[in-house]
Image 1 (cartoon, rainbow, N blue to C red):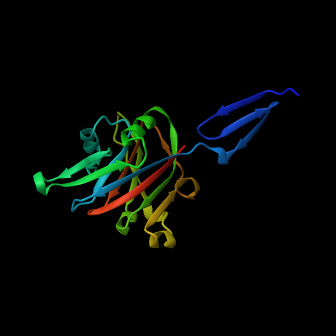
Image 2 (tube, one colour):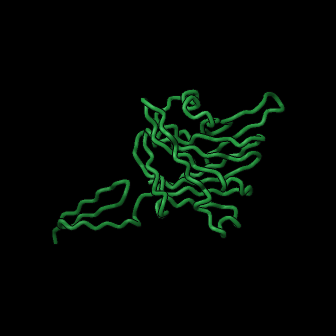
Image 3 (cartoon, one colour):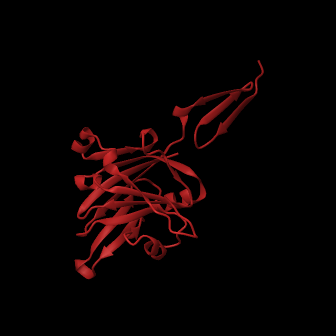
Length: 200
């Protein structure tokens, strides 16, 4: 028996063409999961840029958005004070790839952020916002404030977790990640979060 078989891999789905017929299974979508943890030792809430879009550095970002404190990276990303009295915000990838590796990957490929999962013993971290926007070299565009509380059910709140399922939320859809996408997250003072990004 002869047949033509062609497998086409995309970021959205896996397609198999048999004799001109295309079969698609959305459950076979390739989803990449990236996990990290962050600890804020300072006495202030700190807003961290996960994806900086077209901005070249933190200085340029803060000109546009003064409430931004630091860029996400593996290690100390924010320091308040000096010497032994210094308080820090530290981040660490929980996978074999670094946070910087994830950022460089998004800079090259257009992808979708379908879900953000947060765990924290401090429930204040579920009352903040995810800041999202599309950057431009010609103007400062306003950021969309996505309330994390929109996603937290009573069971999740009691379990110290939030599952921001953008793909299935009636108001907030999947966030498109690209070289111009800006995403920032606030970590409350004296708290820690464990986070996971589902990207495809």
